[in-house]
Length: 86
Image (cartoon, rainbow, N blue to C red; front, side, top):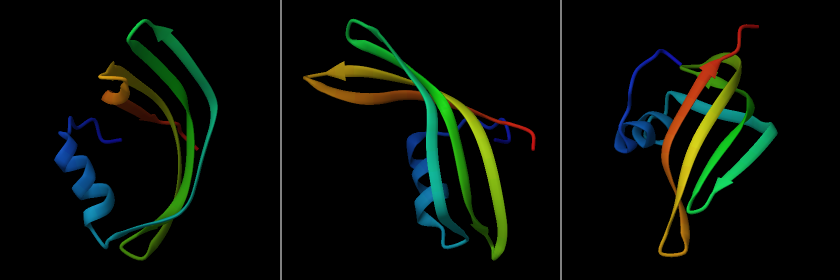
């Protein structure tokens, strides 16, 4: 949400490795999947509520994820999210 480009390990560390963050609820809606052979583009909206360092926060994001089918399994290869102003 800050415009940074993160590698997989950085995303996992920030989202799940820190005790500073606590996700209370998360809902995904307005989902659209577009298939292109072995590729898929997924767009949607995420509404999340939680805490960061003990301070409650709510965010709404629009996202685009790109998946590739490799050896019969779908794998996320890119993801982008934009914060929707409240």
